[in-house]
Length: 193
Image 1: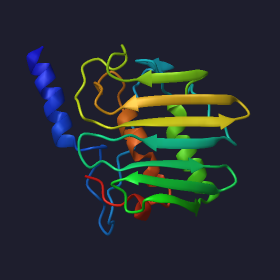
Image 2: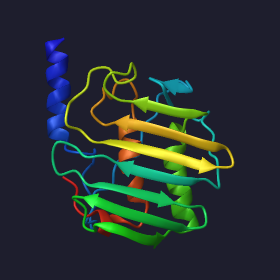
Image 3: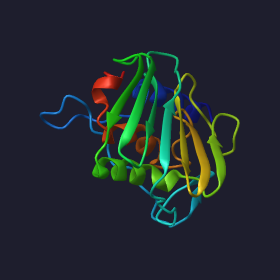
């Protein structure tokens, strides 16, 4: 058990704030790997909806907000609307502090929506954080993300702590952490540790 805790904590320390992979040639910013999904078509893993059975609900406003970590992780929120408008609000450790409006193409909105759709709760809210069964062993001082969907289907919310045991919900951290990379806001977020 001590070895497992040491490996989880060590991986978190080496992993930085939000998981990233090596950048492709000619890119100034890393392009995260696409999320992996388990082979089984189970609709829920550790309390988090996953897989092809999670519906994509078009026409929703999506709000994505990061939290502080024990270091210099960017803290910001993004609101993306189906009409192609968006708002970025940098709070800490971002290139831009304060609110900035931006536009997304239909393809960018669809890509962002599609990346997050497998983790959208069917109803209400889902929380994966230390102390919840879905989290299991966890590292400390990591950021979390809160994603909210609002539209015809009502309000849904997902809160995910990046220090939770990633073997309980494979691919969730990568998918959630890389979703903002699909939007034209890299210059607003700035460098990530």
